Amino acid sequence: MADDKTLRGPRDSSRIAMGEDYEVAYWTDKFGVSRERLQAAVDAVGNSAGAVEHYLRS
Image 1: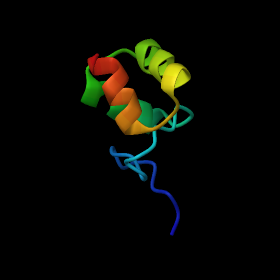
Image 2 (image 1 turned 60 degrees about the horizontal axis):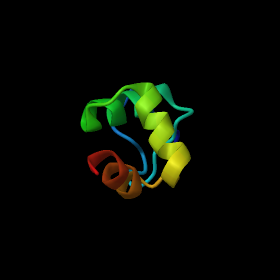
Image 3 (image 1 turned 60 degrees about the vertical axis):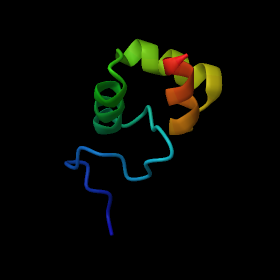
Image 4 (image 1 turned 180 degrees about the vertical axis):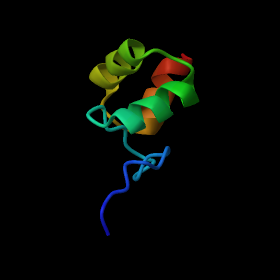
């Protein structure tokens, strides 16, 4: 099955795909941060959603 990019949530909710605009929109809304802040978190701890959430919350 093809990845439906009209869906608002991530296909793999354990990873953040910064190359997919719809995923970036989902995660920035979920965490209440800018794209730049999300990118900085992914750069710091990797693309694990749990690790990024922990990084942003601390």
